[in-house]
Amino acid sequence: MLLKLAWRNIWRNKRRTLITVASILFAVLFSIFMNAFQKGAWVRMLDNIVNYYYGYAQIHQKGYWEEKTINDALELNEELWQLPSNIEGLEQIIPRLETFALLSSGEHTSGMMIVGTNPKAEDQLTQLKSRLTEGVYFEKSDKALLIAGGVKSLLKVNLGDTLVILTQGYHGVNAAGKYPIKGIVHFASPDLNKRMIYLPLEETQDLLGASSMATSLALRLNERDDLESVMEQLKTQLDTEKYEIMDWQSMLPDLVEAQKTDAAGNYIFLLVLYLIISFGIFGTVLMLVKEREHEFGILLSIGMSRRLLAFSTWLEILLMALLGVVFGMLAALPLVYYFKVNPIDFSRYEDMAENYEKWGFDPIFPTIMDASLFYSQAILMLIITSLLALFAIWKIYKLKPVEAMRE
Amino acid sequence: MSLITIKGVTKTYNPKKIPVHALRGIDLTIEEGEFTAIVGPSGSGKTTLLNIIGGLDRQTDGEVFVDGVNISDLSDNRLIDFRKKKIGFVFQSYNLIPVFTAAENIGFIMLLQNKSKDAIASRVSDLLKSVGIEEQRDKRPSQMSGGQQQRVAVARALASKPKFVLADEPTANLDSKSTADLLDIMENLNKNEGMTFVFSTHDQRVIDRAHRIVTIEDGKVIRDESVE
Image 1: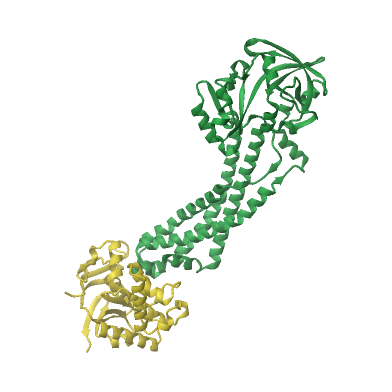
Image 2: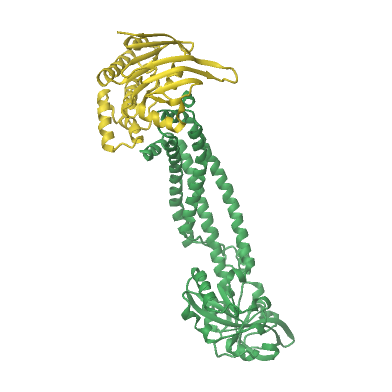
């Protein structure tokens, strides 16, 4: 009966109810879409950045990340090779041996980063092969290099030319070698494009005198969402005194900060939106209380308890909000789905696309379909409405039946 | 024991600013089964007295006993519960819940008393019959005449089987025919079921039908007469 009373009461002033419901609907629709768009764009960016080179997590010898020196390389033992079999959600480990070296060709010399890696595994993690612009992709047994496009112009070399590598190997050993250029890859990030040199892992280990060693193990996961569980399992299975296990957040703190800043901007925007909507709903609550003061007085006179009257009024306000929330979610669903399937694509705007690519991002912004986006807005709206309904409840508890009936 | 006993009741509005003395020491007893009219000119204190008897307002001084309970001692919540169980109210402007049908308006108070659905349905049917508006049971107040609405209000007042009904100017908004019909209904309920009615009124048609007339002027009882 109370539900019936509340439901019928909200339709006593249809126009006001529809305006209130519509304002809640738009707030919910807009906030869900904004969040879905923002989170979708970030997930895509993250995939771009993480899959560009780092992977979602890495394992190093303890202390490597701080100094990044080859002397802190780890030994690729059986325990590490067996990790994919022992850890649920971990698809593959990609060992890399990374160091800085001088590369020269003719009269041109420059400092570069040498990455010794398994060609096939590297491609599976970072789609390196897809970045090939000239030549062919390198093989595990090759004694040849893949160089970034920027290196080609810096050292004035071409496909098939030989590059000389000069560096310091493991524990100070002199390392020097000559390798032909087998392929050229392009990185959108200017920084990576002018310094990346790829060599097969075994060849790099021979060159640097670091047999069976790697500076990092990049991890390929079954699903992005497996990260937390994989990290927990790694921390229990590996000796954390010996190894450092880092997720992308610890390796890329700047990215986390950028994401937080972006999210904070979004929250401020949504806060303003919800404030505006809250004032609208509060107006409705005020009118509702004022209009019904007389009726509240009658209900108290005939014996309805203040608690029940307050509950019925709260229910009435909540029902109104619920209508807005449900319709808002229903309206958001196809919209979010549409932009998930057909993301906003800035690649046709060259300047904008180039700008994004420089940072390693695709200029494509999809939404994300995540149930939490929907129910979090619903819960938030219901909390706001319940808080605003406190005013009506307070008025009911203060109401004097005789005075109210004189209204 | 009297159903209602009022001892030295005073009521002063705005006691600290400009005091308005609505009641100036009322002593009154009403027995079960009475059909009493409280009469007097506008501003004499009729409604204030009814509000105090009904526990809707509190007196400044004095004591009010209803069915043996000193209602001045009851807390706000206990008083609401007391009203629900013991007192039926009929108001001048009917004061029905506009979103409920006649039947729902009558049954609502029983629902507040946690009565079963069957008990409510049966009582509502009986009451609709006794006030002669069975065919209006599914109509909302806006679809009924003033007379019909006031009959629903009387039925609502009786729904919880109260000890007595307080009616504040119940006929003020009714035409002669509706007034006569309503008075017939209340008189029958009084005669056949022994229901106690206390009216405030200055409607001569009601005064003519009352069995006891208590006249108030300037907040004092100036006459109290039984009519045979």
